[in-house]
Image (cartoon, rainbow, N blue to C red; front, side, top):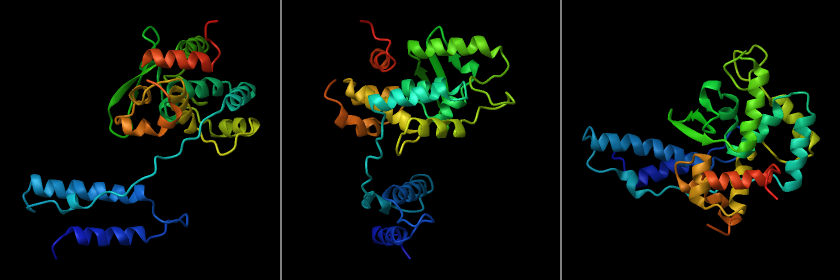
Length: 253
């Protein structure tokens, strides 16, 4: 049986009719991942092996996806969370959380940072993108550089990680400490990844452009940062410094 756009649409409808193990329908985003996988296979079949004359999936549009969740800290929530982190028994938590807010880095990117990845003289950190194996440079604002310098003085070279666990052989697990801080700060519906959204939102509200936000967050496509567009009325390193100095109270009078 020939693979036609109609057959692809039929298969897509079958996928969309399924219910996930969480009891909800399959999302458009999930369906589009199937679409992308099939598209790649058919492209190889057409372009490299000549098994088909034309790719039928080109005539099947992807489903529209929502822009995604944008939950960020309000000014009062930010103060409450950082206060809770400072008061927590885990001494590394405040620096980890502030770094996530100031850089927009993902949880895994922050926790897996090694001393060899950090260049304090250039105020940068090098992180490896887990999805594609490529590396990108992250700018560190003055506040974070000072925190890392203090961390380095107290670490004594015991671990290759900035934020080591008890054995010093792998990164720290902050799951319990994070939950304690969120509860103590009385935050509702807030995840660690929302600190990344917080960074993007603060930048947008301070006038950063979509391209600048995308550059700071290390997003390959500016479309990813378009979710923050409604927070911005205006126009990457200078923008980040200006914004985060205000966030952490280091702005000049």
